[in-house]
Amino acid sequence: MSTARLTINLYTLASNWQALDAKTSCETGAVVKADAYGLGAGPVSAALAEEGVRNFFVAAAEEGAAVREAVGPDATISVFSGHMEGDSDLLLQHNLTPLLNSPEQFRRHRQTLPEHAFGIQLDTGMNRLGIEPADWAALRTEIEPLNPSLVMSHLACADEPDNPMNRHQLRVFRELTDGSAAPRSLAATGGILLGSDYHFDLCRPGIGMYGGQPFADAKPVVTVDLPVIQVREVEPGESVGYGNSWVARRKSRIATVAAGYADGLHRAIGGGIDAFVADRPCPVVGRISMDLITIDVTDLPEDPERLRILNGHQTVDDLAEAAGTIGYEILTSLGARYSRGYIE
Image (cartoon, rainbow, N blue to C red):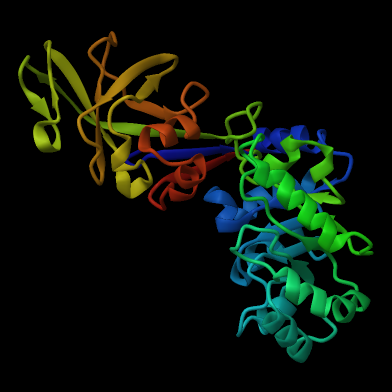
């Protein structure tokens, strides 16, 4: 195979969801925005629906169409961006539930889809999306008789358990929603791990299902195999790649594989990571370029046909740390050139 291979283990993904669900005593949904974090909204949503997930979350109405096709007519698909101008037909056609973020969105929804379900997103201090507390106070008596399907907010620092922002947002969320008859939701993956105070009626894990931190018990969901184009011998003192950034200290065999930063393997990753043949690590050397990565395979007994850069030994969070970013960005950057396969 001439292109890199991305394999998504849906069985493991479902297992991660089950493990997170077991930590709660409420309903557990699933966040499948950004094409299920780059892994395919259709197959991922269908697998989760088979596990019993009935509440799915997407970022934009356009994303909801693929999820609806995968999960059927009965599941709830909520849209974080709410009711944007021009979304009415999509929301109606695919039976999507906008999570309204402002008084303007509330008025738009009432004017264009007065009988259509909606939820509410509140800002509890993140200052990103959500109705402000003062606006909620002014609108609450108008909104609540319309039976919103969900009232939610989002934690800014849930991956830092000791951050005082978590308790602050929890207090504000309770102040804003106590007495509401609508189901409430505050916790994504990090919030689930903060404990039951944060769980309310519905939790909505995302990154933890896909094998990422802060869920330390998550099993790897993704493997990436890179085909070897060429293996060459390099003499001591010779350099490899752009900028002469790596120089051989011994006679070496360097494998060039077909992947690069155009495939989401960021240029910033550089050294400090490996690619694997079975359990044997081979260091990445030189700079990652757009389409190619160079790997030192000197210590292998024979030239490999492919090397694996994501596996149980080296996770998306390991690559993210090397690149100075987060696992979310690695996952969602895995590009369209990969051939994809799913383990059911």
